[in-house]
Structures are given as structure tokens and as C-alpha cells.
Length: 247
Picture: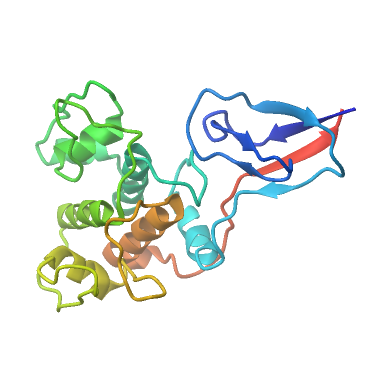
């Protein structure tokens, strides 16, 4: 007998499917040309597998999902967040705040999508570049699948806030023990609660950002720039569920 494992959602959402040796855990930690359905040896009762964020993030991410943040997600919550994934989260936040696309916003500000990258033609990336929120990695490359650090994400978030008209330069000092206190932008992120420390009170700017952290940062920025959007009420668990059955 064989157990067919079927993945709900689009092929893009479930790209990079991995099944561990115990056949009871599925992750989609990286984008690749994986198939939607996989057949594995029957090892016991069918299992339900849920890609869930950590318990401390479930409520906030569920509320953000109600506003379309994110509109799509192609990496697991606890997997490293590629640059293009974070760019899409930021673009979703802009759409939720302004009601229009980033390309339209850039056009209204007199900025065409003139940036050209050799490795991506993603419209959101081009618009974020035009608005000065994201920058390439040199040699006309964006490196969309390269990960970014918590510190790099903080820089992107403050640039996004400035584009939305927020004063990020006058916040009181809110230094983390492991961060240079001259980092004005991080003062604002800490003061507003967008960036919160670890259980040891550190920011860990050099640590690789994971998807659930990226979504938390972006949803908290949404709350700051559009408090009337009300991400503080309601609940929706945003996850992708798979099911398994005997053929």
C-alpha cells in the first residue's frame, strides 16, 4: 500500500516540499520546482500537518492575514526569509495602507520603474527600488533568493516608513545592548514596538531573518502607520494544511 500526501494551495505555495525521515512533518523551506503531490511508503495512520508559526506569533500573524499581509507565502514560517519574500511582504503592507500598488505609488511620486536587474523583473522589487526602500546587491543584481539579516530588515522598514511620511528620526534612545546606540532608525523601531528584543533583551542584528519574524515586523509597521486598520482585533490562523490518505 502507498500513502499519497496531497498539498492544499498553489504549486508556488508548496514549492520545495520536504518530508522528513519519520514521514510526519512537511516543510516548504525553499522555492524550487517541486511537484504538488508526493507518494511515500505507508508508515502508519494518516497525519495532518500544519505549517504553524511559533505560539508567540500566531495571534499577530493571524490578524495580519486578514489585511492581506501576506497575499502569498512561499516559505515556511520558521524558515529563512529570502530578500524577494521580504520585498513582497513590504509591498503587501503598502497595498493594505494605501489601497494601491507600489508601482502606482511610485508613478504618483514621479518615479518610474527604471531599475533593471539581471536576476529579477519582479514589479514589486522594481517599485521598492524606485522608492528607495530596497537596493540591489551590486552589478545590477538583486539576489532575490539571498537571505537578509534582522539588521538589514530594520533598514528596509525605516525606509518604508519614511516613504509613508513617518518621522523616524526623533524617537528617544532605545538602545539594545548588542547594537550601536548611534543607529537612529533602530531607536524608532524599538520605541514603536516594531522591533522587539529576544528573551535576553538583544536585537541580534546579524542573525538571519526568518519568515515569521519578517511578517511580525511588517504587520507591526502597518499598525504604526495605519492604526485605524485595526490589526488588534479578530483572529485568523494563516497556515497551509496538508492531508494524507491511503490510495
